[in-house]
Image (cartoon, rainbow, N blue to C red; front, side, top):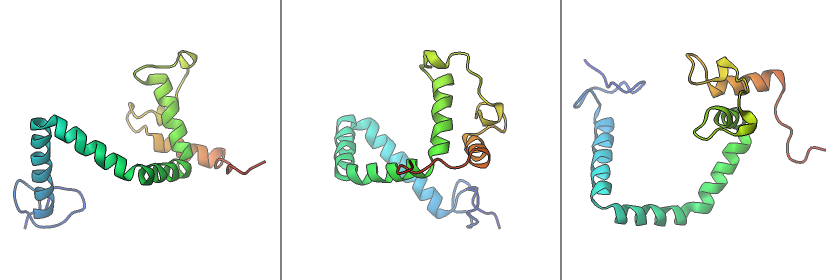
Length: 129
C-alpha cells in the first residue's frame, strides 16, 4: 500500500501522491489563488477586513512569540542587517558565523540561537535591574 508523500502523514493515497486531506487542501489553495487573481480588489478588501477583525489578537500572539524567542530574532535580525536587501552601512563587512548562516549548508538561525543560549544564557527579563 502506498502512503501520502507529505512527511509523517502515513495515510493511504487518494490522488496525485497525496492522501484525501492533503489533496483537498491543495485543491482549495488552488481555487483560492485563482479567485484572488480574478478579483484582486475584493481579495484585498477581504484580507484587510480579516486583519482588522483580529489585529489585537494577532499582535499579542506575535509579542508573546518574539519574547519567547528573542535569541532567534536577534540572530535573524543581524543576518538581515548584513545580507538583507538593504544592508545597513554600520554592518558593512561585518563577519557572520558560517554555522548560523542559512545560505550555507547546515547553517541556521536556530543554531545561532542555541549557541547564544548555551554560551551566554537567556536574555534577562524586562524587570531585571
